[in-house]
Length: 146
Image (cartoon, rainbow, N blue to C red; front, side, top):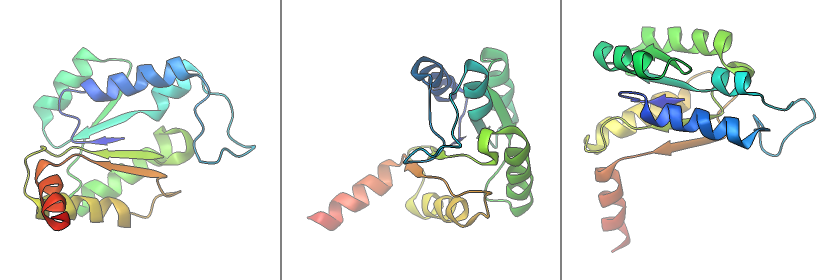
C-alpha cells in the first residue's frame, strides 16, 4: 500500500513487479499458508491511497488494473474505513508493505505523525516493512550523524 500515491505511477510499477516475480510471500520468512501469487493476487495486493480526489481519479483512469482509494490517514474515520477496506480487499486482509510518500518535502513532524498513525493502526496483521520517503527526515538524520 502506498500512502500518498498521487497519480498511481508507483502502485502500478509495484503491481507489475509482483506479477513478474510470481510467488510473492505475504510474510517473511514465508509460511506454509502463503500460496503462489497470480496476476489476480498481485492486483488484489496493491493499493494506492491519497487525500486528493483529483489524484485518485487520474490514477483510476491511468491504471485500471490497480486499486486506489480516497483517504486521509491523518483522519481517524478515514483510517478506520481504510482498515476495513483492506480487510475486505487485500490478500491477507492488511498491507504487508506500506510506503509513505506524503510529499517528499513535507515537514518532519507531519511525516512522523503519519508514520505513527500507520504503525499504531490495529491491522489484521502488522506490516513487515514500512518505507518512508522524506527529504527533510533524511536531512535531519544526516545532521544527527555529523
